[in-house]
Image (cartoon, rainbow, N blue to C red; front, side, top):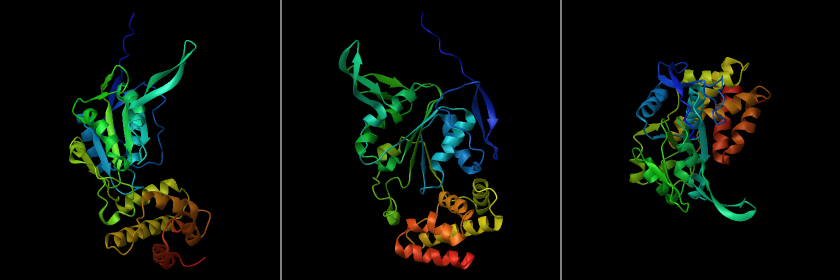
Length: 308
């Protein structure tokens, strides 16, 4: 007798720190549901736009500088809403099999043979309310993205490359998210995002929601850094955020070739709990930069904190 699918109950909840309401799965467990990060701070503007995509069941692409929280936003929304979430990174060497599956050797009834194993995207599409995140989409080769074209259409399906050409349909509530640093159009930041490929219009047009993740408000960023580095003097936190803003402004003015993400702010704040601010900066930030940028940023830091 065929087993009937278990009904999944949902309730409308408010995302912490915002007015955005979304459906949460109630009494549902799954090994791919992320853990809630109690230090995470949701942004009203970004939650509103992601909620639009979720409520309309549309593909969602988040674009922005590295370390600005594109992936963590989706992962923490999945955690709070109790949604299974699978995240896969792609690069210039990735092939379509990393998503849809491939023939793999296996032993069946004592006989060694090739069997087709579904990839993570194919598996996740069959999971009701499952979310899939394709990270660094702009680094994928065109051949990988072409495989996604049919699936990215409204009500789209995924055709596997097994002997039966199995067609996988989207389960109820399935969401496809992708992230990228530049949509492959690196411009003056090309050296920062080497290896990105320009996405064609056909791929971009299959995303009804494209969200540009910009730097957050200074007070909000201070709160994020403070939560992640508890106990650090608040004046130090404010200085970190001010310095990060200076670097971003100089990047926009072509005076520097590096950025300063919220992730770097947190890394510096954590190191600052052990070392003098300048030494902490060398350990967590400065040693990642080229000599010219390092010298400029070191001068900015000494202006705020002096030398050890």
